Length: 157
Image (cartoon, rainbow, N blue to C red; front, side, top):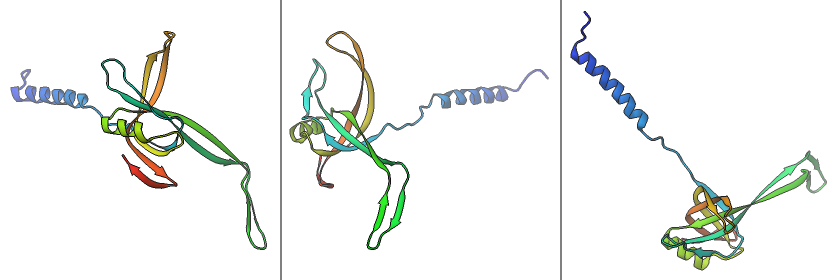
């Protein structure tokens, strides 16, 4: 009566063990960023001793929105719309390109004022500046850069 058959004990052990294994399976996640904007400075290439070189530049993105009440009136020949004030915000992003072919082409062809589309992932890091102060940095690590001109694709890297 107090004894369990061996197969019942083994079954419970396997069930417990399989629960442990499934809890160790890593969850899938996503870190993707897409930016469309204008380059703020000519790219620079840096290389720290013993590490891969990187091309770095800044990219400005712009948001616009309307605030306030809206009035719509019908004129004799046209539609009159007053939608309040327009507000805008410019956000600057630090773009880092590590991929060898993309890094070199970006360094060679991207210039201040260029309109580009960047795909990549966001990365948060920490560094120590020349005054020995620890600082935090956010950067976009580019996987793809597309050069644009007047809204149409010009060249894809």
